[in-house]
Length: 133
Length: 173
Ligand SMILES: Nc1ncnc2c1ncn2[C@@H]1O[C@H](COP(=O)(O)OP(=O)(O)OP(=O)(O)O)[C@@H](O)[C@H]1O
Ligand SMILES: [Mg+2]
Image (cartoon, rainbow over all chains, first blue to last red; front, side):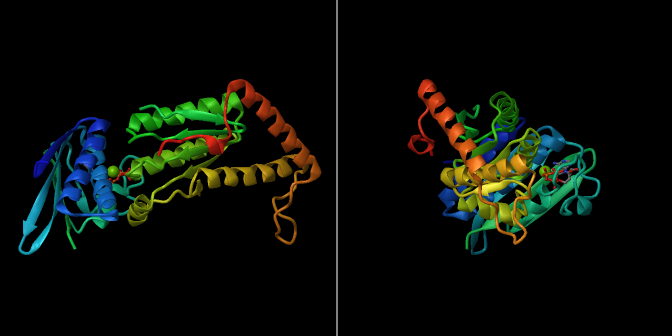
């Protein structure tokens, strides 16, 4: 298995592929048990947001090492409409389309690190990491 | 992949066989709505044992399937949510509020049986589900006979359609 995997998200099959790739790489990195499901679920949320809110984009999953820490890094990027108010979008229950509004805050809860960069008209990039404990 | 739906007496059993795309989930919802009407089913069991992820979309869909089937007169019970999946759902803050859940198929069937007893009681006499002391009302002879009759009819149907009893079926984990 490659140390990095890129999955194009333009339909629901892409979401399924992304979370399967995430699970596979996480397993290879030594994650186990519920961590695998937690990582796959977080990937599912950000990949779905790409499809729902930006139509298409990419999820890049890679191993990550920093200092003595090892883990998995997930980047979800798109060139969609962007998010005007990130703070609002991160609020639990906030949704612009009648969703549960759980995707973004949920993914943040599931992972150890969560960064979001977004510019209206240019797109959104989410970087999240989970560390091996 | 389309989810196979099995008719089992008064109930329908949908066993999710693989990872579901959003389209599969929508198809499942439409198929169930259609069949609940056609077979006049009282309960639906959705077996999600093989699902490795239940995210916000899947939760929303399962919830709306259950609510829609309720409007069509059938109770839904979701069975087989794996421990890791349940763990992730809790962390996400996802709940299946208003939807029945049970550990496995067997308990799912028990859950629905319990419900339909009470439903019969309710329908036959317009009574509450509990008596004044809060004890669940036992099925009366009338409803028991009714059940026996239905069970008999179902057995006959099964003989002709070649359906086996729930426990001898392999649901493909
Ligand atoms: N990639 C994206 N591009 C543009 N807007 C986004 C993107 N991701 C999220 N958003 C915005 O942030 C809001 C909150 O996202 P979140 O995932 O929390 O909820 P949701 O997708 O609306 O519903 P849910 O995920 O619970 O089904 C969205 O309604 C949308 O307006
Ligand atoms: Mg979302």
